[in-house]
Image 1 (cartoon, rainbow, N blue to C red):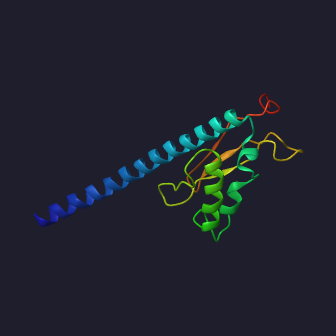
Image 2 (spheres, rainbow, N blue to C red):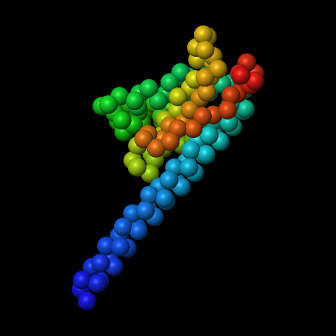
Image 3 (tube, rainbow, N blue to C red):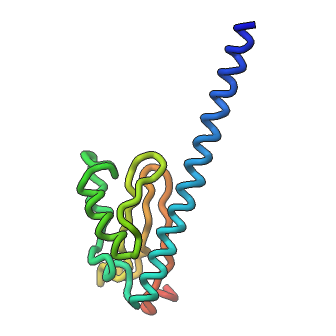
Length: 139
């Protein structure tokens, strides 16, 4: 009887792990859409591309080093600034404990101005933001 209960408990624990991961992925998707919406609202409200709102060409660059890996204070501090400029309360932690980050690319380089802005969930997903500037709308 104890062996049967032990076996059933292990099956339940394994299935719970899958449910937890699905919940994390769903939360990540929700967060990414919230950040994307904040970017869209800020760009239309201020009539600027993202890099001019956050005053950075690469907010995410402070998060990319092996020493940081989207978890260090430098990453948090940069994301606090960028996200607050987007109207969000500050840096947002993903369900795996790392900071979401943004890479502002549109109109960043004259030689290649039409690179898309991205939102990054470290090791899980990156989404691209549609172009805002008229220069890139039909690119």
